[in-house]
Length: 128
Image 1 (cartoon, one colour):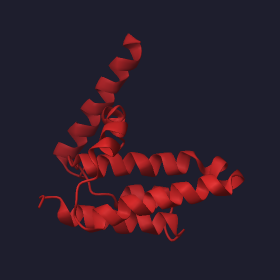
Image 2 (cartoon, rainbow, N blue to C red; image 1 turned 180 degrees about the vertical axis):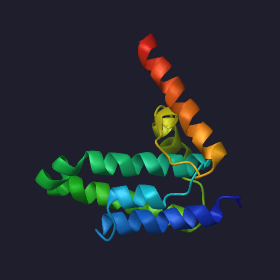
Image 3 (cartoon, rainbow, N blue to C red; image 1 turned 135 degrees about the vertical axis):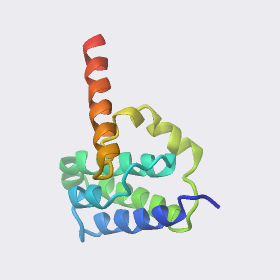
Image 4 (cartoon, rainbow, N blue to C red; image 1 turned 60 degrees about the horizontal axis):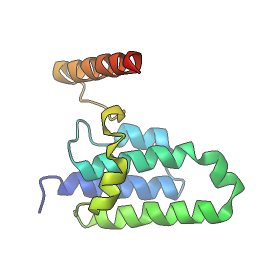
């Protein structure tokens, strides 16, 4: 098994709480494990962001909402077992990894991680 089992189980509960409306996406982001390097958790984080970004579409299209809810439940079932998400799901989200707004721990090391990440993202925007 992985070193990330407990974090994966925690994220499974967070995802389920969001789908059930017990927790907002913003609250879920604050509860998310800090400084995670687990690609499964990073992919699940992006799924959470997409869940919120599709809020208008979810309100208009019942079938889309049900499909997205089922997808989030699928992710939570895998994570609940402490398992890694399927490689194809991880790969689909990898293009977003560098911009993942995953929070860092509230300590000097976390501050510098956030600072340098935002600094390098700013430089990449100027290059384009």
